[in-house]
Amino acid sequence: MTGAPSRPLLSALVGDEEVEALFSSEAELAALLEVEAALAEAEAKAGLIGADAAVRIGDACRDFSPDWNALAKGLARDGVVVPELVRQLRDAVGEPHRGAVHMGATSQDIVDTGLMLRLRRVVAILSGRLEALVIALEEASVRDGAVPLTAHTRMQAALAFTAADKIETWRAPLARQAGALRALAPRILAVQLGGPVGTRGSFDGKGDAIAGTMADMLGLADAPCWHSGRDRIAELAAWLSLISGLLGKIGQDVALMTQSEVGAAGISGAGGSSSMPHKANPVPAEVLVALARFNAGLLGALNQALVHENERSGAAWTLEWLVLPQMAVTTATGLATALRLVKSLRILPSGGRARPG
Image (cartoon, rainbow, N blue to C red; front, side, top):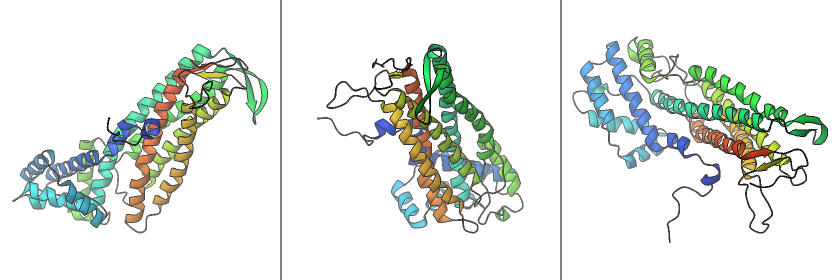
């Protein structure tokens, strides 16, 4: 008897291992250490700490072996993992340079910048999948575009048009949003450095220079401190939900087109039934609709995190950690599902009675 899978069975339907991995504990820790090493090097270049201290901190970050249990306990106690991480990192660095670790920074500087490093990779994955989907839709239009269909408005038969007309309603907004992401990403993927209260007053007048150097080193945009200004996160979340919604529109259309009474489309490898072998259920189309509705609901929750009291909110910050990763995974799943759906979809003349492939 084989063992149970390590991931929930539902992940086979709505999971995405590639993007989920970027929100794992291991990926988060690697990003936090990369930020701490960059902070030390930037501070050395600015003259805030010694060059030898920066080298030692960088070496310790690369060779760091965490006490995971202590990190978990520290997170539960402090509400953020960085205080315990810094304690362990200082022990790893040792004398005489332990005091140079995390110099002038606050936990939010490290966590937010580490998040941006991971989001940069998420954005690259989503961008690639979106562009592949746009191409697949273009290919579908070439293949099936001349097929005559009946347009429907308000769920009623309207006038004749073609499959190319239908596919274009799916393709065009996705192509626009691919362009929107290319413009959005360089602006929102920004370094975070503010010190304890966001003024950079803990960096001896060198905070702007340190932030700029860190941005260059990490491949992020330079920006003033944005501890309590969470519009970058909200803008990305809105884009994620928007993409899910556009994919949900494709899913809804395809589900309607594959109805037995309509027969305007068929899906190769459609889902089966435990009791009705004649059925060919439009599972990927249904998944797209569910994901669209799910991300729309999550967006409302994420936007609650815009309400940051004063200079830092533990509550709003924690809410982001709960919601944003799920939104990213949901969007990634939707793009992968949509690409499979489009490649397996065949459009038939209205009333042509689709048959599973």
